[in-house]
Image (spheres, rainbow, N blue to C red):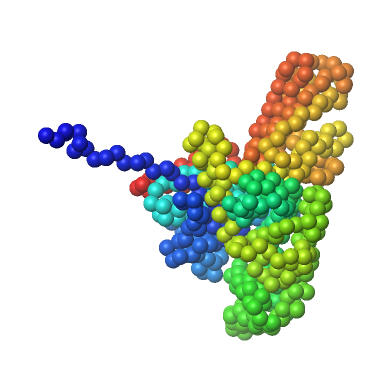
Length: 543
C-alpha cells in the first residue's frame, strides 16, 4: 500500500532573493544583477540597457521615466526634469544651483530646508522624489526581468559627493521602496567589476567622466582586496558642460534679439541642447558636422527661422579644451595624494558616456601613457560593480555576517572637522582616510562660565569653516560653570561604510554627552521620507 504522505508534493526549494546594483547617473542610469555568478545588465521592454534619468510629469497622472520621458522633452519642456542629480544635496544659493536656474527649462524654487526643489504643474517636488521616480522605474524593470520582488540594492554616487548628497541619495532609495545596502563610489564600483575574478596586483586609475560629474580614483588591487588609495573630483563637470559650451558657440552666432528669444523659450533652449549633444557625438566620428535646428527663432515678420552652422572637430576641441584640462588638474591632485605618477598606473579604466568622446580618449591615453583596459563597457561597468557588491552584502547578511566575496576598502573623499574660535575649521578626519573609521579629539571651552557649546560639523579642505560645506550642528548643554579652558570636551567622529558621518561630544568629567547622526541639512526629515515612500509605494505589484 502507498503511504498517504507520499502523495504530498516534494518541498519547493526556497529561492534566494536577488539584490540589484544601480548606477544612478546624471544623464542615464543602469541596473544590473548577479545570477548564477554572472553579471546581467537589465534591459527595458525594447531592449535598451541604459535608461535616461529623465522624469516627465503630465497633468494628474503618474510620471513617465526613461526613454518615453525623453520624447516629452520638446513637447513638455517645463514638466520634464533632467540632470537633477547635479542639484541633489545642495543648497538653493549654491553656485551650481544658481547656474542651473539659468540653463534648465523647469522651475527651481527654494524648499523648507534651504534646498532646491522643482515646481511642476503647481506641485513642488524635492530632488529626492525626482531621483526616487528613476529608482522606482529601475526597480520595476528588475522585478519584471527577475519575475520576483526586489527589495535590496546598492546605489552608486560620484566619489566626491559630500555627506549631504550621499544622504539625499539614500533617502531617494528608501522613497523608491528599496533597502539600500550600501552607497558606494562610482569609480570603486567600476574597479570592482574590472578586477573581479582576476589575480591582479597593481595600481588602477578609474577616470570617470559622466553627464554631470567627474571623478578620478586610484586603487590598489591585490587579488580579492580592492583598496582605494585616493580620490578626487568635481561634482559640476561633465557632458552637460561640454554641451553648454557648444550651445554658447551657437548662441554667439545669433543676433541679440534672437539670443533673447532663445533665452526666454524653454523649448528653444532644449532644441539647442539636443543639437549640441548630437554635434558632440558626431565629431568623434567625422571631421566636421552641420548643426541644424528647425524653427528655433522668429524673424521680424513672425515667421519661424532655422539655425544652421558648421562645427569642425578642431573648433570643437578648442571650445572644450578648458574642461578637458580641468579633469587633468583633478587627476594631478589624486595622483599626488596617492604618491604615484601616471607611469605607476598598471591599469586604466574609463567610465561614463563622455569617455566615448575622441578628444577625451586621446587626452587620457596621452596623460597616463597607456590605452584603457579592454572589455570594459563605460556605460555599464559601474552598475555591474554595484551588483557585485550587492550580492556580496546580501550574502553576508544571509550567512549571519560572515564575509562574502571581495573585500572593498574605500575612503572618505573630503576632510571632516568642526568650527573653532575665530571661525577656523579644525580637521579631525583627513580626506582619503579609509572607511569605516573613527577618531576623537579634546577641546576646551573658550568663554568663562560657558554652560553650553555648539558643535558645527564641516566637510572640505578650506582653513576657514565658512568656506567649507556645513553638514549639521548640535548643542552640548549642562556644562559646569568654570573659567575658560577648564571644561574639557571630547569630540568623536565616526564614518560608516556608506561614508555617512556620526558625531558625539562628551564632557570629560561628568560624562554629559550629545550626538548627531548627520541628516542631510538640505534633505528630508525621516517622517517626510516615510510619507513619500508610502505615496510612491509599489508593494502591491502582484508578486
